[in-house]
Image (tube, rainbow, N blue to C red; front, top):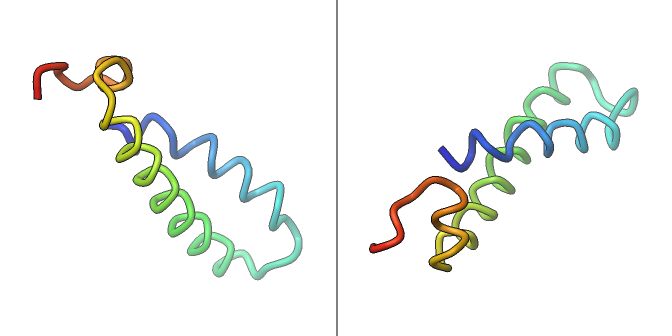
Length: 62
């Protein structure tokens, strides 16, 4: 669920960063890899705290 929450904002950033500089097929692959890895990293960090765990939709008593 957390990857779903964050991936779109990261994709917008990579589109702005790489627009016109890469082949569109490579750009799509880079978007996928970057968005997945950064949103996964953000999710791992947010799931470490009790308050942030609740904010991203997980149960607080893990």
